[in-house]
Image (cartoon, rainbow, N blue to C red; front, side, top):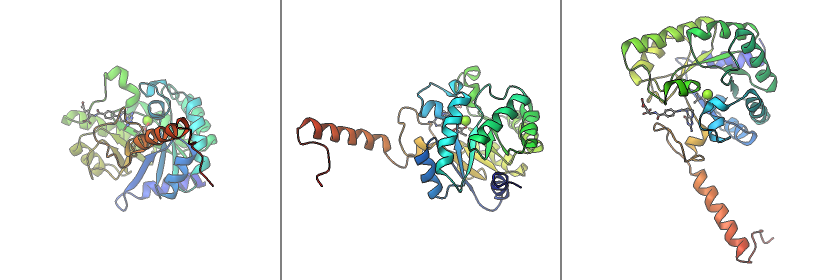
Length: 263
Ligand SMILES: Nc1nc(=O)c2c([nH]1)NC[C@@H]1CN(c3ccc(C(=O)N[C@@H](CCC(=O)O)C(=O)O)cc3)CN21
Ligand SMILES: CC(C)C(=O)C(=O)O
Ligand SMILES: [Mg+2]
């Protein structure tokens, strides 16, 4: 087994033993800091389209964007499993899915993630057969935000929860090492976590209903204050500190005092 595959196998084996700690990261410095912090899994998410590139949603993200950011994170992180999101329309066929998964892997991703269940089963099998571990993603699927008309909670009814389970089981059978559950109501997330043999990694699924959690790094450090999902806990004030530092710098330059350290 190659190193990237044993890293993914380690995440899979954490189910029932240790919570999987995951955060998104988009650049070298953040990859290095999260690695030093002991994060298990760094997701180079297509959320970078929103919080780094300034698009209104993730449907504008391309393979070129992903390759650029995956390579930067991979230069910074050595211990954590690095997962790269396959962006919208990069996995429309099994052949295209394998080709683009290989490109993300060559750029430095240990594994890839794609959105959806039953209709992605053949693509997941093909990528896993090519030797690249796959993380599933079920529940709310941001790449479908335009069709859905917003970000809505999933699994509210029993039939919707059962449909999510069917998708998760299809992914599990195809060989995913874990599944991200996004915006699934807590009771359904708990049911899925019980029924699946691979770890579930929750975001917007409440507390302690999944085998791990993932969060968008700019949300937890307060670096992108203009759109923060309601479930995120903001633990630092990077945006406010950045603006305050720029204002203090501007004052120093404009006052004639100068901004350089006097050494
Ligand atoms: N900064 C950022 N953080 C994220 O977590 C994130 C992104 N961007 N972009 C891509 C997706 C979109 N995400 C979102 C966005 C909004 C809600 C939200 O408003 N949820 C409400 C609405 C529930 C409903 O209407 O059914 C909730 O109460 O959970 C959830 C996840 C999560 N992802
Ligand atoms: C929100 C997570 C799961 C994601 O897919 C992303 O950051 O793109
Ligand atoms: Mg994503």
